[in-house]
Image (cartoon, rainbow, N blue to C red; front, side, top):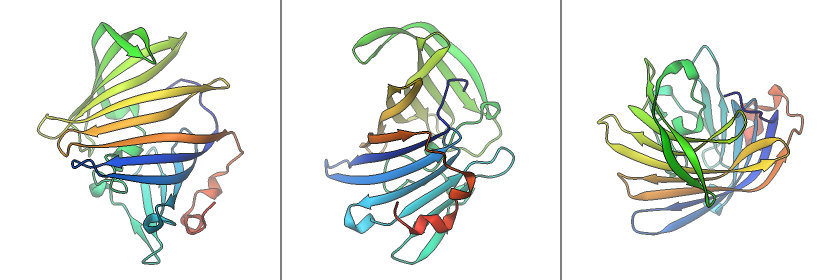
Length: 228
């Protein structure tokens, strides 16, 4: 939570979806975000069937988050209700809930291991294994088990996570890598495997630009209609 973060991020990304039969779908997208991703817009550039689709998210501290999709084929916006945040985002193994930050006070925590060894980018680190259980919030998960390494003094990175469904069965495995850009550790690779569906999603950052001076006023639904 306290790790140094840029004011805003613009990135071009690739998303590779692999279904249980091994069929692959590749998507290209542009993301703009600020305030630690609490405000975000995403536009899809390819494939052709998805070009122009866009997503807006604004997270609020004291009320439900705003999420909207722009569907150019229907020329309309679709609001994502809080009851639908477990739905898949663009057919991927990421749900709308996975796209949001977790508010610290919404969870109860326990460190269940401080002595495990984790390999990250071919180096071994001592891992903290953290259990996070949702309190009185609407979540598709009963708990998360997260492997956290100390990469520098006072800098901790979550590099792996297991998320469990309502029946307390393992639902998703996530592996995360970061790049250090200037003074910031930025996620540049996210791999998600859905155990139930036996499908996977790989999200990779291809290009990135930090601290462009984005304003809050940029993050509104009318801007979803225009590809950047």
